[in-house]
Amino acid sequence: MTREERMRFVHSRKSDKPLYYGSYLGLDRVLGSVHPVSRSLGKEAHDEHLFISTHQAYEIWFQQIIHELRSVIDIFAFPTVPAKLVIVAADRMERVSKIQALLLQQLSILETMSPMGFLEFRDLLFPASGFQSTQFRVVENMLGLKSDSRIRYGKTGYCSFLADKDAAIVKEAEDSPTLLEVLNMWLERTPFVELGDFDFWAHYREAVNAHARMDHASIDANESVGPANKLKLHEDVDSWLATFDQLFDEEAYAAAVKRGERRLSYAAFKAVIFIELYAEEPILQGPARLLKLVRDVDELLTLWRHNHSLMVHRMLGAKMGTGGSSGFHYLKATTGKHRVFSDLFDIATYLVPDANLPPLPHDIMHRLGYVLELGSDASAAAASAAAAAEAASADA
Image (cartoon, rainbow, N blue to C red):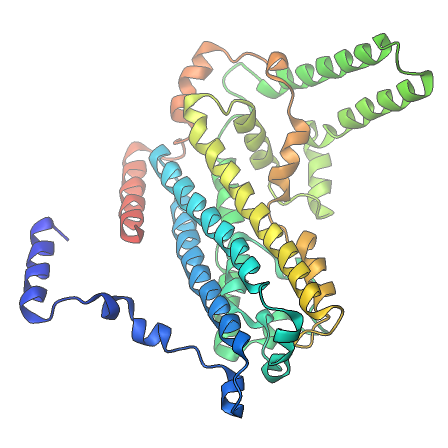
């Protein structure tokens, strides 16, 4: 819409029916949607109003998170992602992380309700449960949580507790491209493994070995450590060195993927390491920031699950949840099991200090300014960039 069209629209509305704050936000519907069940029994439980309002606020923010994640997934679904759209995606992931921080704070508001206050109306909620939050399941699926990675909730699938229309929405999110998948494809297209005659990973392997030799020498030179402790420290260094088998041996990495220990592809995992190692280089600052924010989102979701489980333990003890789950024990189990981006956290294992990094040849440093946008000819790149920019603008 052009500026002239926008102005005509505004002026026509002024002469017809001016936009009003309450109607624009739909406040009649929003504020009129708190209906405590206890009220229908003639004696309203005071804390039920807080309980409903807090959960409604969660659902509004879940809706916003879905909106942001969908736009980021759309950006990285293109075969070519211009550097400026990487920044747009990072900004939107930062917004998601800020919303998550707010959701953590909302738990503390809910904790102002005492266990006795909750018991005044808890039994009236059966069989409704937070497990039936369709939007939370959509968020999990959009990030990349696989159905076979979920903690079992009873003896049936997690969608069986949802209404048919909600189950269909969750299943659609499960079958659609996820953030993990599109980021994996984007990382695979960053050709850092070999550039010209310079084999970075051969040089990096030597840097890792050199770092290990320095550690062994430092242990031997430390006279304050006894023989038994020195042996243990040497074993620790050797154990750290052995973890690099996955990095330098594609078959070993494939075996880790098969065991479910890795979700990123071999090429994508190595690309993340390269980005982390040279994150201060101008062209890699955007991708490095994006990956950091993805880690933040995964970490904050894990922290929310943990704090939520503690709150439930505080309110219910070991009682069964209103939806029939094991309550606290189920929520506690999901804290670690439902993480999606563990690979990004494991990257730190494979990093060495700046002093040990192999210097990159000048021509490679120069070409890094273009390498993130390789993958198609100029016309296709321009078309993809224009379409992505239009989609990003529409979501803004």
